[in-house]
Structures are given as C-alpha cells and as structure tokens.
Length: 188
Image 1: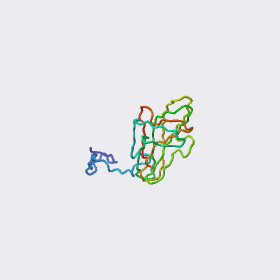
Image 2 (image 1 turned 120 degrees about the horizontal axis):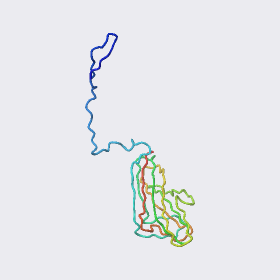
Image 3 (image 1 turned 90 degrees about the vertical axis):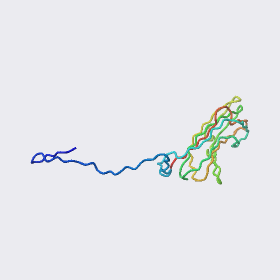
Image 4 (image 1 turned 120 degrees about the vertical axis):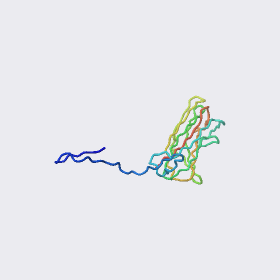
C-alpha cells in the first residue's frame, strides 16, 4: 500500500513499500523426527521410561529378618544416557503378613558389574511402609516414589526387597492387583 508523507511543502508523492525477501522456507518433515538429541533436552526433561507390571502368579513367603528379594519381585532395568542424570522410581506392591509381625520394604539398586545398594541407606523403616499387625492376615499395599542419582552409565536394575523384621511370615506378591515398578530418566 502506498504511503504518503507530509512535509513543509505539503503532500509528497506517495511512497510504496515492498515486502522483504525472506527466501524460501525449508520444509518441515516429521515422519522420523529424531533430530533432537537427548543431550539437548533441558534439565528436568523425561528422556526415557521403562517399567514392569506383574500380576502376582507365584506367592513367595519369607520369615527373613534381613532384606530378601524373590523371583517374581517387580524389577526393571534402565541404562542412563548420561551418568549425571537421575532416575525417578515409582513402585507398588501388595503384601500380607502374620499377626504381630512387622514388615519393611525397600528398593535395591543393582549396577551391572558393580555395586548393590539398599536405597533406604540402612534406615530402620526402609523407604516406605513399616507395618505392624495385631491380627493375622493383614494386607497392605506399599507405594514408593524415589529420586535416585546413581552416577553411572552402566545398566541399572531396581528391584523390590522385603523383610519380616520380627521373623514372622510375610507374603509379598499377595493379592490380585498388579505389582509395578516404573523408571524414568530425568535430565540433569
């Protein structure tokens, strides 16, 4: 559209503007949009999610006063893209235990070719539920949410462990609900 200007002499001849040359835009193709590297993601981004949902199939029993795991314990393995990243762990399990016993649950971090670590760090009450039953057959569901900083790029397995603190009988993997563990890699 022409633009006119006014000067001391009056109305000047109309001016005209032309659109700037922006060039030809590049085509954006999203069919295999894998160009954004995980390393380019901002801090706090979820880089990968792995998990395991298990319906109880084999009921495991223990009277161990030390933490033990079992063949059907919820477990998942993740390999971080950067050793500085963290792992957000969410896990749920159902357990039944006998009268007047106390149970504790925790998650162990097992680094491939390396260490095994109780994430409760020796805390008397583990990471989560420390239950006491005055009557037999008490059923509890335990949910753990934990942010771990494993500082490794090796494969890491996170597995449920439980113990009967008073040496009574507990039944992990008990009940009909799915037992779960989900791991999310969080960018540092």
